[in-house]
Image (cartoon, rainbow, N blue to C red; front, side, top):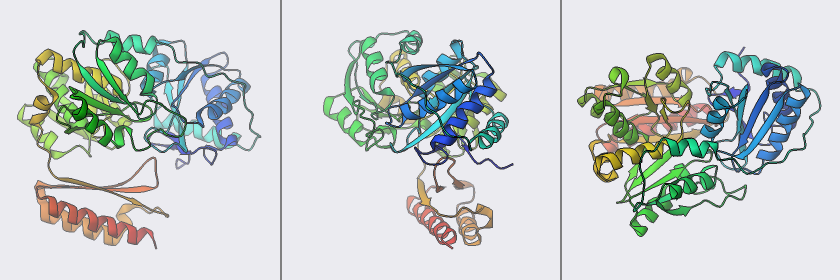
Length: 440
């Protein structure tokens, strides 16, 4: 059976429309309740989208129909839901969020009591039950969404052994789940915080801000003479940085800095860092010079984590800013990533500009192509011809990756090589071929 509801990161779509229509979401709650078992309890957290409370009430009603209890701690980062689920009396945790997507989108992301996302096989079983139940009329529960508690913040603070007195930093909350938590925590640790986009109104989440739009943050770092800046996405499971110079720092830089630091301290089992096929070839070469292996997986922090667990690796992540520190977390955590970067800077007494200087990024061009009708990439003849042409020209000095997004109707093209103009040429040529083929 092919998957109809669950993608690479839970169920995602436009709030109010299938698969996030009332009937399907209520059925999701019932199916989750049956899976959890009578008298179990489920944690329900959410980001700042205006559709979150209604989706939560539908899920809660479904859980109640199945005899399952629930608790709603309020607005929390996705990793906060995962941490609380693992350390509380919950059979499962649900995060209602569409991460970096616009406010009209939303999603349902599940964690088991272990704090890990459900495996594909269990998601498929849930999906079968949801589809069987969705013909029944939807119900809503009367719910109150409180302010989030401080247990997750206390955990984060406990992982950081220093004070940040004298540090100045810019925090861009993306008008999402980090908007309160990140500035409060950094202020608590002694830092002077300049807050940007930390006033969510339900509709401004990710709007020209956050991890996908870092220009405001980078400009503010320079304008305020800050030590660094950080931008979070809507559910705060990823973080993108800026040096004091305003230079952008992404997940690849973090993997190199933190992975190398762990290796120097003898804390990198197997001397391996896990990343996806999207990580820049420059990261692989920089780690190799240090004797560290870069292990690549399919795109998605879920697959990074699976490989980390299989190998016993302690750090892995994505260029997009999802970084998993497995000794402390079971999922990507933007605020925890910020603390780990700060820990390296404080311990070494160096600036982010200095520590991030080792990574030489090879030219990489990313093109997104929106499509109407999906067909397997290997069946698109003109696309395959354009890919072969690129691979023949670059040989071992470049890479080509073409894939479909697991969360949006987009084909993603990535071309990497040593000459920027040829990288751009081939990326646009492949993207044009995809657009032509999928328009037929």
